[in-house]
Length: 496
Image (cartoon, rainbow, N blue to C red):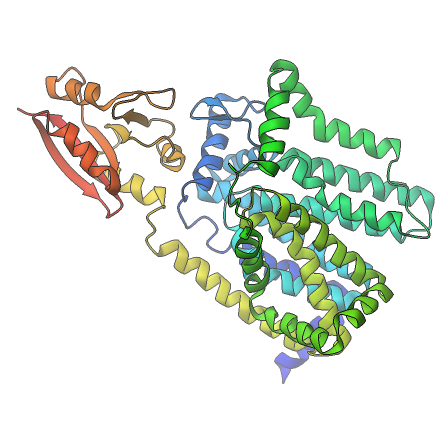
């Protein structure tokens, strides 16, 4: 009985409700956040860029394998570097920024619900967001999308505050906040950060009392914060203008070289994470869909038009989703920012229909979080062939820290390079280009003749083992092996 009274007090207090959302978000975000090793390829790439940035002290020119890497603006790398400086050169340092971004986004979603409706819907929206698998597991992976989601949600939140504000000066303040948030998003991932602005623009043009969006102060803030880095690097490297516009914008949108360019990819890539990523809250989505089907599509559309907040949230989801669907490059995390309006819509439906009380929702959310934290722990300890920390540790056990480490015919494995602090060389079979340090024949000859002293460890993937053994058979070497089914370490030295 006392526990139920305690839950009632939480659900009836606005401050306590927001604090509970923040607490639960902190638990699920930070739990086992640094326990899992870095997975290839995305996590390894982001980690190595941040490590090289810290090593070289050059925070304006991101490098990967010590060559300029322009695919993303530097803000997310700066966040990683800040985490490394606080927590060390490890997974905790790298992923702390994502955990903080998830926590802040969850609280922002709650305040968003309060601004649109009332504190109860805000509380429920926050609970839904923090206990849904999609945003939780996205925050555990090194990528720009969790941080980008924070900036996009903040930007739209500031617009809504401006739209509902009567005082002109305060409205201008919120619009400047919107442009600052969009600028930070632009400095995190570039043009995709502005997709919610398309929804804002369409919505605002249809209002009887539209908000003035293009204040000089707001545009000035956006240009200074969002474009400063781009302007600097293009000034130093004029060819980057063509690269950013052609490769990073046009080719991603229109080229078949992008990720999942197939016509059906929006269904197979975006739909599963937006639907199944809801976890327990999918129950309410399905109920809403059944109700819509019974009422008819026409009545559903008329009902949305009558409810301003619901119409705005649907527009926020639909316009970016349409853009992503027509683009030729599609990845699951592209639609992560859309989960904020999804959470708000579910919360409104639950509260409006009186389906569950807040106490029951809090219990389900807490139970879901326990499951999610347990899954994060299982993923962290379960062996994975893409876990580069396990590969690194296997090599260290076999060769020690003083050995020379190489990887055969692999031009990536940046996670392994991160763990070896850049001391990883790449060797190729026949054709050597800028991605490789030398030919495997040259290395094996040096080892066999003793011209290259010390122990030499070469990492070979299982599918390239026959090719490597063909080269190895030409030389008489002392050999030890170790590793896993996917990755095999060869410790080679001169035959005495």
